[in-house]
Structures are given as C-alpha cells and as structure tokens.
Image (spheres, rainbow, N blue to C red):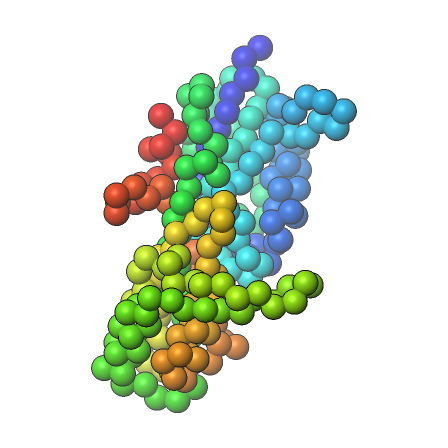
Length: 235
C-alpha cells in the first residue's frame, strides 16, 4: 500500500472566514474521515494526522486561494479524492485545484514567503484621488513605520515598513480599495489592518476602519521580484 501526499488550493470565504485556524484543521480532518479516506499519521506516543496549512488567516479575513498539504495512506485518483472531500466541507470552503507532490517536495511553510490582499474601507470624510495618492506615496517613502501591537504581555513596537512590498489605493464611490503585497516568514509579517491604521495616523487619512473588509487574494513563492504558486515550487 503506497502513501500519497497532496497539495490542495481552496477558498475560505463567506461564513467560513469566521472559522479559526485550529478549527479549520479539525474541519478538514473530519471531512477527510467522512469521505472515507484514510490519512497518514505521525509516529510516536500521540499520533496526529499529517496535514499542514500555509500561513494562518486571521478570523474574519477571507482567503481567495489558500493551500493545505495532506498525506493519505494509499494511492488514489486525485479527482476522486477532491470530489469526496468537497462533499463533506462546509459552504465557503471550495477546493480549487490539487496536485500529487513528488518525494522530497518542500512543505508549504518552507516555500511560501509573500501574500497579497485586497481591502475595502469606507471613507470617514471625502478624500480626493490626488490626496489619496499623495498619502500612499508618502507612507511608502518612509524608511521606518513603527506600530504598537498589544498582547497579554503588553504593547510591543514593531517596524512594519520592511514587510510591505506594494501598496496601492483607488477610490470607488464612498470607499477605497487597497491592494497590498507583503513579505511573510518565520520572523513574522505585517497585518493588513496595521498598514491602514498607520496610514490613517501618519498621513492623516480619514479611514473608517470599523468597516474594513479584508480578503487575502493569494499566498506566493516570491523570488527576485516574481511571484509563483506553491504548486510550481513542489517539483
């Protein structure tokens, strides 16, 4: 009986965006089990299913194209596996694509290092297009942007500017659409809401962050300025 390792792209939208990352693992495990597919398990005293995700999404943030690696116990038809799992998943989680990984393929967290976001936010006061572009340009021209994060241990200051690769904004009616691309890694990253909060504070932009909608449009393998899919990096 030969094992099979899969990389699957999926959506996490609509009501599914409120599923926390740990709960998402359970959702996939339960769906695979109900689909009648036997997963591979780690060895040791407390065996766990071999399933690993890319960088976690914040609760409430939609994911247009996320990734998960899954090991199953025997070789099966890929289309059948995806169809059987899809039948057991809740609305908002749709399997987009899958590939069988070659032996020795690097895990997701070893290859993913960038993410792109689309954010929609209402204007608290009218903003002219020229003023918006001036503010975005001034923010990007800053060498450092310090932002205070709050946790149980108290506030910690972090320079979020090095993580931002691209930031663009465009006005549509009474809201602004921002396109953001950030670096990601073991050392961390920057949250989309942190970028907009600092943009509002440092460049005096009247943004209503209470009405912020965030969608992660993709997670990428970025090399020398070019983004590629973790499917391509799997070979």
